[in-house]
Length: 152
Image 1 (cartoon, one colour):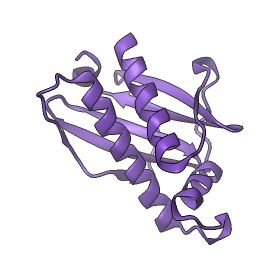
Image 2 (image 1 turned 180 degrees about the vertical axis):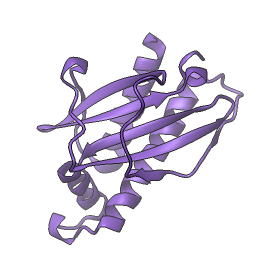
Image 3 (image 1 turned 90 degrees about the horizontal axis):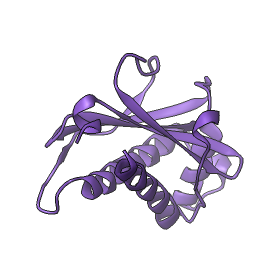
Image 4 (image 1 turned 180 degrees about the horizontal axis):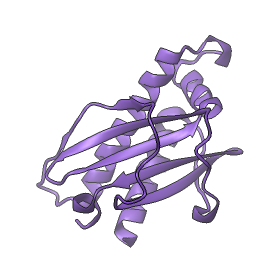
C-alpha cells in the first residue's frame, strides 16, 4: 500500500499545485473531514485494466477557491457549473496520474466520465482507502474504492 500512498499523494499534490498554483499538503488520516452538507464530491470510474473508482470530496468553499483560481475570477463570480467542471477535470487528472504510477509502463487504462455525486457517502462495507489533504485550513479527501483496484 506504500506504493499507492506515494502515487496518490503525488497525483493530488502535483495536479492541484501545478494546475492551479494552490499549495496542498498531506493531511492527518485520523482527522479526516466529516461528511458535511456543504461538501462537494466528484467520482470517476476506472473500467480497465482494473475495476474501481476514485472520489474527490471537499468543502464548497475550497471548491470555489480552486475554481476561481482556474478561471482567474473573483470567487463571487464562480457558478455551480464552473465548480462542477473544475472538480471533474481535477479528478480526471488525478486518476490518470495515479494509474500511470501504479500500472506497468506499457499498460493503458480506460476511465469513465467524472460524475458529481449527490447521494449518500460510500458504503463502509466496500473495500476502500482514504487519503486526506490540506489546502490552507480546508481538508479534502481522495478515496480509492474497489478490491480489484486496491489489490493491484
